[in-house]
Length: 92
Image (cartoon, rainbow, N blue to C red; front, side, top):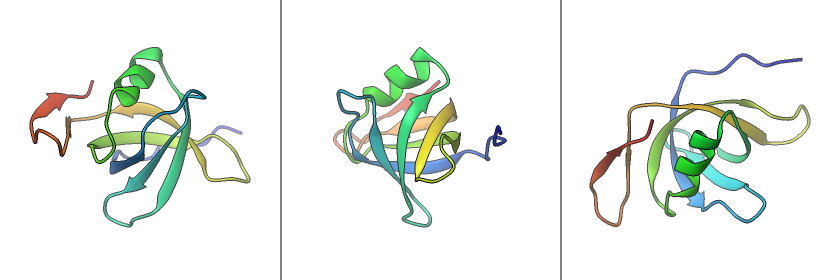
């Protein structure tokens, strides 16, 4: 069963992407923790992999599993910000 994509949500990177291509993000508005484990494209994966802890980026995602809190990033929207330099870069 395929879950339709949700509207993009602003997430904060809590744990940078690891060697298994998993990263932990927190929804900015609700503080809900999600684990990104799959990516629609290499471009999305590479962009997310480049983000440091604390960065914020709007992500569109769908559930990647039916029983656990794992998600697939299907699109990036708008701009990302990094707390280190407070500069904005294009996320797409």
